[in-house]
Image (tube, rainbow, N blue to C red):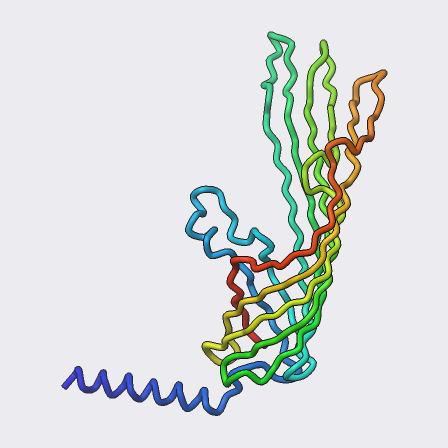
Length: 239
């Protein structure tokens, strides 16, 4: 008897959910706003190896649906890191000062775009669109060293691969599948052109009688035109 009651409750709940989905709007409508998380599923399972599930171009995206078929989108990704490592401990008896290596980087990317959605099905919303992106990354490495009883800093700015200005323009196609009212999973492909201009490397030394150096040796500018199919999931909701 208990099993029959539980079965009846499950059937009733399923019918209620189905009836609710029939009356509620499953997909987007005019005026809806949207936040979605883009993540690399492979990195989640490899987190113990140091992978970041928000890497590989992933991040957070905002969308605003002007109508059921037109959406404006914006990605804003800001990455910042600052680390400090002690390379020499202070020791008065040995006349040693505490020395550190300090590394930091800042990356900012803005990617506005527009989407044109098609009818699809009750749960599937395919779209095409376009997006531009502008990003800049800068890094700084500081090495402290001791000369007699003085501490000096040897600093390298923009010495890493990827430091500089990045500009892109892409055509895109994707689809959102709504597995529940206002909740969806999505995929997206893009094809576009990208230009990267490397930042000039600057080296300075705080010691007296040293000269600052600016150089482009080892820095590479690039222009590419290629498809992109990132291995990421998109999980979003409307509000």
